[in-house]
Length: 71
Image (cartoon, rainbow, N blue to C red; front, side, top):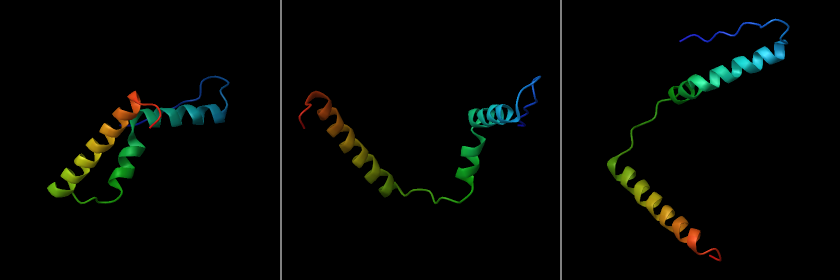
């Protein structure tokens, strides 16, 4: 997957660079490369479950705060 940006008429180099940068961000290549740069061990089931429970707790608290503004 190659990304190309060619100068359009009297377009400045800065503008060309901005356009290229935007194209790269839209494709998500940099995000993918950063994720792949180091190996991440897969999570254990225990750790996954603990994180899920913590997430549920935070979501429940935030839902309460929605209805009670003085909390």
